[in-house]
Image 1 (cartoon, rainbow, N blue to C red):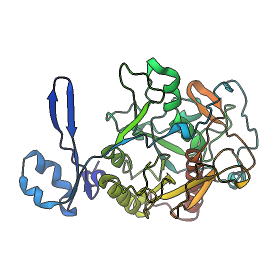
Image 2: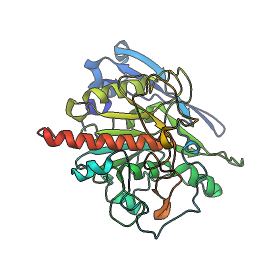
Image 3: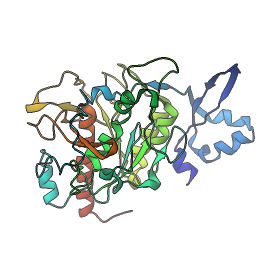
Image 4: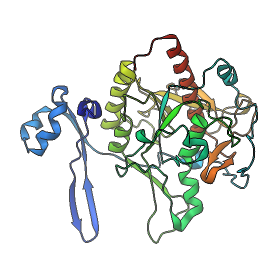
Length: 369
């Protein structure tokens, strides 16, 4: 792939200074913004130790570590996995969703031709509800630079591991689950295709029992994922956000969003959806993202809803329509559950609806792909 396309106007140069003391390693990594004219030569120059490149650095900062910016406990309340319907016909029958989604389907808009990138803790792409619409060639694990995008499994704490690592499956289910296969529900954009982009690692400490495993990622990981295959991916679904008020974007994420929003989709701009986060956080307060909040049954404002001027739209916090208390998604082992709730579910819904809109727009405009 063209290096300039992959690295953008921001080059994420990871200078690893590893100091070893016994079995402990401290890694220091930095992100650099390079003058545009030198984007394509920065890596060869560093390999040749050409220190003149230092005069071309515009901005630099240490890579940031993010812990628990993905919070599944906020989106899987009660996690009623005892209500498992693995052998049951489509649970919601003909009443899949409200929000006039059935009208869009009846008009022929089902997400066909639109490609999503779902950044999350990993997705089991072999699930029957997801396999048909997964593009394996576009999937990527940014934690270890591999094609294995399956969620982590902590065998010594399996129950908590399942709770902590199933988030991506449920997001993908709302966006792109297969319709008409007699399993669970259907994705809002059920004829779309998607790429699983793994950006979170679930970690625990040896010898310590943790009730809630930690979700770990770094800014260089997220920024790479947000510019992954901009020649193919139209919409990036990001059901995670900052946990701090007035938290500015790190350099890599900021520039990646700016580049993708300006250059993705053949110059029309990639679309990035994020949950509404704490007031003033950088992921919400940028022109390059669509900030999504959530509403409850009959329009009630959920207790965890974020009141923020950056919010552009809302999805359903709890059900598949404004009066429902549940929505059905797939989960591990091809089971169906009704426990997925919160702003993560809302982000998935809104993202998929945007996908229907893109399909409708393309049907009236000649393709440039």
